[in-house]
Image 1 (cartoon, helix red, strand yellow):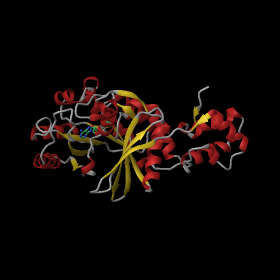
Image 2 (spheres, protein in one colour; image 1 turned 90 degrees about the horizontal axis):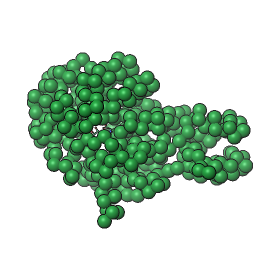
Image 3 (cartoon, protein in one colour; image 1 turned 60 degrees about the vertical axis):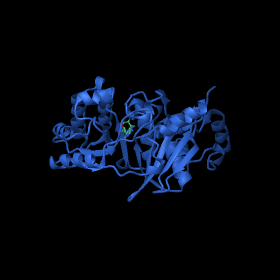
Image 4 (cartoon, helix red, strand yellow; image 1 turned 180 degrees about the vertical axis):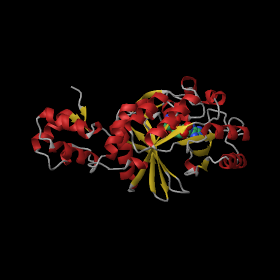
Length: 347
Ligand code: SAH
């Protein structure tokens, strides 16, 4: 019989599991603390549980985790890029960055991605599978243990599309923010989506305190459909309607990611059009000079073009910042490390 992944269970699920086994309900809280606060990786370490219970747990359950396969440390600013290996040999990436307010970890939500954004390295090999809550949690726990730093914020902006792994991501967030676990407030969590509109409505129902980021990257359907195939299913007007509704229902401002690609989406006319689209939304735009991916021929916009784009947004009262570049000496674009590693193994 396949062993049960106990680390992916939210507290209510763990309570139901304990009840099924005939264990007292407080045992679920103890187990949860061992798994998510003390973050142990074996049942032997759970010293306040009866020996008989530990034995049954070891026979029927498993505690999945990730291990560090490669680690790149920036000599410039200390940013750490992890290539993690999962138990089935697949790999994903996380990036640990230091900001004024603490350490922020960018995690992956899927092994690969099927969204097909043209400028993104994560999607080149397609989607392998979704990550489990336990695997996403262990990206966070492992980075904390390895670096010895307290992680104060988490962004779901690594490999994968979080809203294409909806249930697992919701359980991950519930466990991450639970009192008996890391207890990380969802105010310190950002979730980034390429624009799966049905997922945005589902997320809205949950009324979470997290920050929703939309990867917009274009001011109109023509450009967006060229660079982001998801736009053919959910055109911009539908996406922005969902965003307005999300803002209205949750009161949480939305952040828009805009990767500037030379000659594609970075002209003053594009900036003007973007302002029209985002008017009255209290939106924040994060401008990112695109990271070149060697399989694609997109080039990043020059500093002057980025600055001009930002000025136009601000003149039109659209709040815009240019993303600070971290770890530029280990600047494998998102998904590139995994892709190179797989390529290396295939040779
Ligand atoms: N699938 C989600 C989250 C993962 S991608 C999403 O699309 O939002 C995280 C962010 O990195 C997205 O904004 C994505 O568009 C951006 N991104 C991907 N490749 C990039 C590149 N080469 N340069 C700059 N940003 C990139």
